[in-house]
Image 1: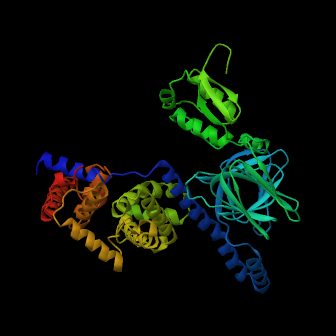
Image 2: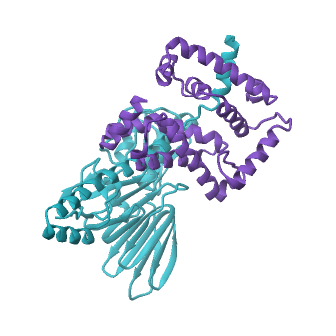
Image 3: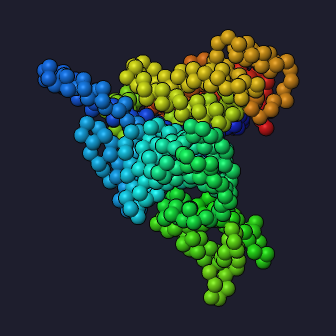
Amino acid sequence: MSGDDETETGALLAQLRVKPSAAARERAFMHLEQEFLAQQAARPRRHFARGAIAAGLVLALFAGWAWRNLPATPTVVARVEAVDGAVESRDGFVFGGARSLDVGGTVVTGADLDVGPGAGVLLRISPDLSVRLAENTHARFRASDELELGAGQAFVDATPGARAPLRVITPSGEVTHLGTQYQVRAGDHEVEVAVREGRAQLRTANLTTVTEAGHWLLHRDSAAPLTGDLAADDVRFQWIARLPARFKLEGATLSAFLDWFRRETGLTPVYSDGIDAGRFAQVQLKGSIEDLEPFEALSYVLATADLAWHREGAKVVIEKRQAGNG
Amino acid sequence: MEQDRLLVQQLLAGDQDALRRFFDEYFERLYRFAYARLRGDAALAEDAAQNTLVRALRGLSGFRGDAGLFSWLATICRNEIADLVEKSARVAAHTVSLDAEGGARDAARAVAATDDAGDKAFAGAERLKVIRQVLDDLPGKYGEMLELKYIEEWDVERIAQHVGLSFEAAQSQLQRARGAFRSALQARGLSAKDLLP
């Protein structure tokens, strides 16, 4: 058997050496971890039930009551990616203890989420889907694809084309989407949908309507719906800048960073005429933008490439840095 | 094998580090396992690998350790591939599960017949499928050893440990496996250059 033989076999089999994308890996691990955590969460309840039976009839009756009244086994549906201020989760298990949500913490089905005044939280459901909850919001995940929004505002960010289903259920109607960025506000007998990208469908007891990007729709239980135009940087979206989605800057290209910036702000970055856009787009970035809001991050990143920016309506124009700008 | 059993015990005990190791060790291998069988459909291969690990986690207590963990996972993955192929109208037109029963199996035979018809100009996905098929049909542990060496890029020492052989015996087995692989190609009327891009 010759070295040629080894080389030949190696070359043939190397064609099967394919790799899934990093996003696919992350997505798969999240699913596996959710399953794993759900299994772990199910264990104490089984032990609890067994112990109750052994303790006698009274406790067994109590266990029976608890079994009927407790929610189904909680499943981890989201991870906290960013939090600002006081956000509490009440898991409702037996004695309903409340816990503060911190970055890296998990949210389970059935838990009541309360976002305090001036606070906000970004929950990552999958690499393709996140939900930001604004201050004074009360919400609960019924399942990983069902968010019950009792009051307040939720901003949904689903990567276009990704399989990222989510139904937002408010007292006045349900909102569904296909690859989009939109905000739902649940008010007193009303629901408002503001769509920044893609389309979202609102279904109420007597209305089903689709709202397109660049529009808002306000539905009141006892009145005809109102609609209007919406700028990408509408004041409704201002609060989400305090809860930016995580972006790994180290090793990313400027092009990838600007795409993140566009999704976070709704503004379109463009290069000014004097810039070789192709060359700059592929510039590899270093450092970290952790804890920076999108505009702070933009200034920081562009400065490292000796660039600056200014606003022109819904665009952010990137230009060469001159003494005194950017 | 002992390492597999230990990993399973740790998973059953709720060890999160073990979960990461389980994922790192097997997700990409299962992805590759599915990829060629799904004719290069990356999205379906991703689903197959992910669903396999989730199913395995649910049935972990049923793992007896008679065979290696990957062999057990591969069995689950074959079923998963068959399910995905049958359920997905999107891929039904251009994907065939080689492990499925019934119609899909007939379709697989039809594809195999096309392979033998003398047309050696294989397209990318078809080429992968043929190489995978030849590898899977090799006797004993030859297929697994070649896979570990040339696809997973394990060194001989690690392969030897995995299959329970001495270093020298593993080297010798690998040499025979390469010969068997070449012979299997020849038996199909193929040479390496028919299967290289």
